[in-house]
Length: 241
Length: 241
DNA sequence: CAGCGTAAATTGTTATGACCAATTCAAGGG
DNA sequence: CCCTTGAATTGGTCATAACAATTTACGCTG
Image (cartoon, rainbow over all chains, first blue to last red; front, side, top):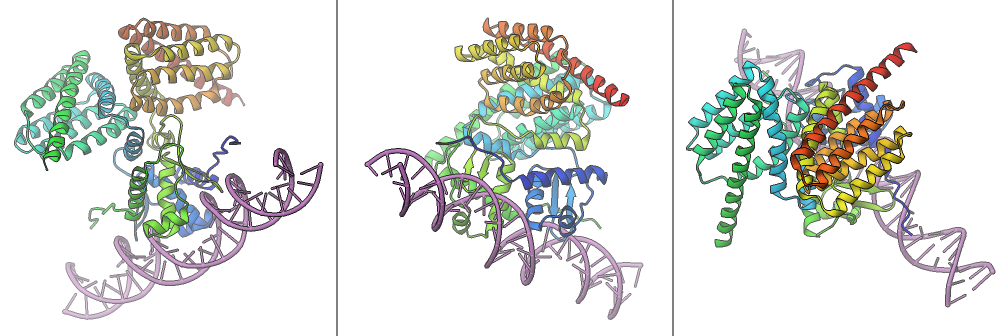
């Protein structure tokens, strides 16, 4: 018969999420602040501790809360960020390709670069320049180079002045970086990548949005090729074993 | 003293997520399939039911699983989608503005429109055309118009051929649409919005990527203005009460 | 034999209570 | 004054039970 699915899975958990969030707003808790202990919170909301924990667990996996045993449960501090895990799982389950993810990353970061050219502050420009300098210093150390590569792109996203956009950039890029950290081993032509980073920076520095977009687009296309090459090499290496 | 935070919150839950995911892959479960019952699964993984449930709860809140009391726990079927709730909470906690969200939506959808112009299939073009026809039919019914507005944009995102991108578009747009559903009440100049939709469609239909991007950009700028106007009217209405 | 309703089995949901492990903090000793 | 040590606090895990919704199977009725 297969009637339509009710889909009302665990009203309680959702309710807890909503009520805890209400509490956060009402008590005016800021990132980094501590929530009341679980036992007390459960009593306040009139539910059992396991039920409360289900809700908190949900908020933790959404990246809103973070808990440390013995210390308490806290609102996450630091820059706003979404966990990449959901996107990664979704991608694997449905077989999204890395090419699609690079394409998405390109759209996001090209947009971010354009906005950064219009809005970047002096501090943000300085951060970008510093990361480029660090990349120069790490030309012989792939892992270290990658770290500053990430930091540079994060700085550009931040300089877009749009936290929503920066959050999405971070979410998508994290998946690609994590994958790349395992395959980068051998050093390629980092000089080319570095030169493209500098081109992006110069365009942002000179407030040339169109050039910044074009430079970022070019850079990510090259990065995608390098990534594909590394994947291929890794595959061949595994087959040899 | 404030040593660095270990941040190792609940290794068990994360481990459960990983192991359940492994199981999904190993058993080759497809979207819509059912997982083993909790009692059995807990025994398989050698953990207690509450611990297992914490992990499942996490996967549910990530949108990977879905459970129905008495029936079982299933892999979600339907098109891949990320829950908008995490982004919404993050936005509220950090005070992201709607302008930023529109800007992000513009970047995503402009990119999607460009790709759709290059890749849309006949079926996808037909879906877009149908939704435009439905908008014509719903010119006097704001809520209904909005439904087909959403469907049109979803069709464009889908026609981009990039499921990652489509997923992000959906996630961001859902927040804006949900907000708008509450403020749209009075009908404005839907003719203008409809005309812009048609312009987007014609550009995609004729495989003109640049024009499709420009049309989508223009459309979303106007939508943003309409949104801001509705928000303002709603604010004034509330003050009057 | 076919159709249908009811009861039993299955399965997720919530609750209670207890104990463990990590952290925090204050009292006491050097 | 600083360090150590212990108790109190707090999150993490577990075992068990009762509950609710759905599914399945059996038996009754026509």
